[in-house]
Length: 371
Length: 98
Image 1: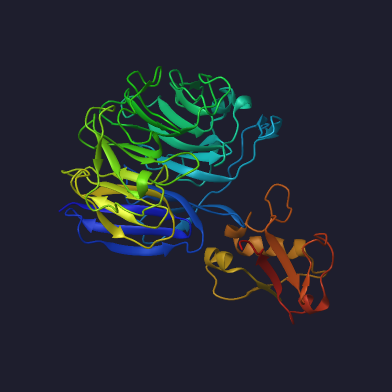
Image 2: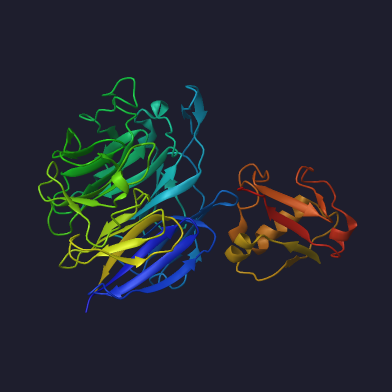
């Protein structure tokens, strides 16, 4: 019988939650790395027992941990993230140029085809790759040549938080950066282009349609249609049908088009999920009601999913990496909150249950579907 | 033997339960202690001082015999009580929060 494993990163450690395919009864393991911030954990699709974890601390810096037994034991691996060559500068809050400085890893993206290859998205924004199971890291510096001097950190830091690998074309990679925008490489990460046409940021940028500078919160794709991308921007939910060459808004009837995560149903490429948040300064759900919104039409027409979610006095947030879908039938959907709850739906979002309620603030949720 | 007291985050990371003991030739200094610590526990590289500049991370403090030695130079000899192991060299995560 199949099973699922949730990898939950929190402000004070990592947790591994496991269940059988029914997804009703859960076993909780953790905290791993107690007291450390775990921005993200992700398993290799080639070898699911190979999991990478980003462990960091404002006091003691960055660590990278690797498990080869599905999260039962861990070993520290390479943590030297050195920008290639002379790092150069990017825009600072006061309009001056500021040197690139490594702060932490926000996101790991293991290769779709090789268990030893993994990508890391860093703050200050850069993309690193390891081909030896995270022992050593090399930057892909061409990304910062895509107008990096114009990039400027938002309030959450200038982080590279999303990495999408095209399952049909191994040379194509998408990344997203706050607050620089989305970028695409078609040559395996050597060179990059901004893909932000159609984005409008009138409240954040002096030129609302600038080539870079948009605060992209998350992008997602369905592996069967890698040219179709969905985006949760600071404000606006967007889609592209041409690999990011042009974006159109699909916010439709959402109660707010501000939010952080966005994800795609495992078996229905036009079914997408977002969690609307009231505004950029009020990071909680509108009306105190925690509602996931689902569109079965690839955007524009949205329905609120509320069964099992708190519908009064709820003021948590759901961060950009804190939503995931499994590949069982029916598709499971999961998300974690800054209040420490992890919610699971075993029926594509129709009903929800809290798997755990009292973890530290959840930074990230990933799910592995196991045989 | 020099005794080194680590903060709990670093004890967890280095997988040690208590003080760490290190053999260090005189004169005993911050630099020599940290050099020896990083050789004995490579996972601690970069956690106490920046790997490139060798400077103390901003939110780390060094206490010796009830005094703050964080702002002494790396090569200043430490008190005899540290050098003879009577007192531990304390690596502290600075206070943060409210």
